Amino acid sequence: MGTTYSNKTVLITGGAQGIGLGMAQAFAREGAQVIITDCDQEAGQEAIQWLKEQKLKAEFLLCDVSVEAHVVQLMEHVQNDHGKIDVLINNAGIASPERVPLQDLLVSEFDRVLGVNLRGPLLCAKYALPLLEKAEHPAILNISSTRAFMSEPDTFGYSASKGGLEALTHSLAVSLAPQRIRVNAIAPGWIEVGPWEKDSKKEVPSHSKEDKEQHLVGRVGKPEDIAEAALFLCSEKAGFITGQCLVIDGGMTVKMIYHH
Image (cartoon, rainbow, N blue to C red):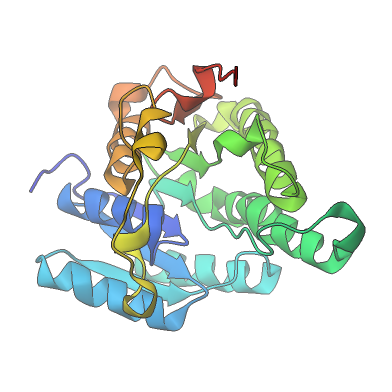
């Protein structure tokens, strides 16, 4: 157990499963007061239980970050219980529907993805602002995706929202600089979250040789890979870093693939 984040309040949206839960575990291990939000009650309660089994403390609050009233309520709750936020991690994101051809895409589905992935981080930043201002070294971290820069076919909402989140990151960094709030992003590549899902969705990962070899490091990513970088970027050690996006993808985006 570390103490890097003792007496620090860390709010992680979408923290009940996957990368979010990996970060919750890491920050709790470093002594942070971790608050997980998620729109999945079952996953949230399981996450808290799982952390408790590791002697780690966290609290869970139900919240849909795309709904302004939910976010207002969330921040009021944090204000009353903690009085400040040292680190805000905008991690909540959805990708549904996974893939739909443009002609079949429902605008309502596109809007829903943008609502969670892009409006959510903006709302959280807006309403967390007074709480971040009370912290000594406040930081915001947005979890983007390498899909901000590259796409598979028919992933319009997800790609557009993550591209928007990249731009929102530098916009917030510039805008909140007078308040000394640093704002950065991490763009994960392929991260295997199977073992980090709630019990009813847990999967044992199986990756082919091709899956592994398309990464320069020879493997698919894990939530821990993102969590370690998040610990650094949100700490005072990264005090000279703001407005940046760190790509964590095992080198996949720099590898050119030609089929001969």
